[in-house]
Amino acid sequence: MINDFKNINFAKYNRVFAFGCSFTSYRWPTWADIIGRTQCTDAEFINLGRAGAGNQYITTQLVQANLKYKFSADDLIMVMFTGYTREDKYINNQWVTPGNIYTQGFYPNDYVEKYADVKGFAIRDLALAEFAHAYLENSPSDAIVLQSVPGNFAGKDYTDVLELHKELLTEKMPVSLYESVIYNPRKPGYWECGAYYYDPGQAHLKEKYGDYHPSPLKYHQYLTNIGIPLDDRALQYAQDSATKLAACETLDQVQQTWIGYENFSRHII
Image (cartoon, rainbow, N blue to C red; front, side):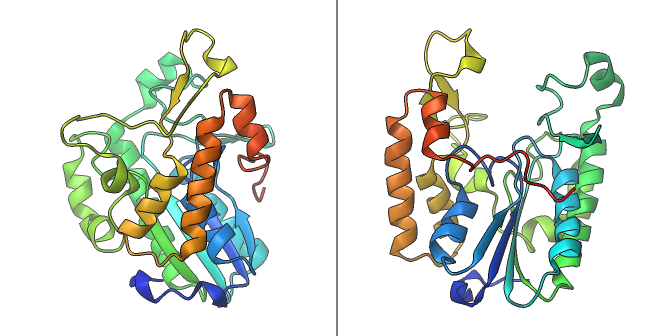
């Protein structure tokens, strides 16, 4: 487990694995792509992040990847845990990862009303995160463990759960992506959009859809803020990607610019 980021030697790795939600694998380069595609150019980069994924999916993929690929001392394992209010299912030979259970369209309203509980989600996911962290500490590989949003992101109804896992949240993981580069104290609840484009899935919108996923430059800023050592290739990659993203007018243009970056089919089982 890497706790002192400034001593990372990216040149030593033969394989780099990334696990997370859409903040890890998305329509354009994320923090994981910046590391895997610019700092570890001689390594195989395997990004198992998935849009909408919750911590159940992330932890499952981590364990299955280890069993399949046999993590070694020459590997770098990167994990970014996501928000707690997500419920992943493996149904009919495929993963269903609809994202925030309170805003998705897969689970019916009566299911959400009956079974969704914010504190219950926090209890489940923080236990999973504890196990995953301990699992990686006992792995021969180097590992970086991050969090996309802070533990209290879903509200104040589970402060006792957060207190129980305080060491994990405040000492074993750096500040979250949200707190580092998104949160604006002058605009509580505001989430800065990383791009604007016309999306056929948002046909009701008269203007471009504001996509809340951070821009490549925001991801670069986050890695810099938490002390990840990046060379000039990383900044150039982030700048070039941000320029390309700003030039995209439609979702199709975004997807054509980064073909294969958001790969829903890439999972172990």
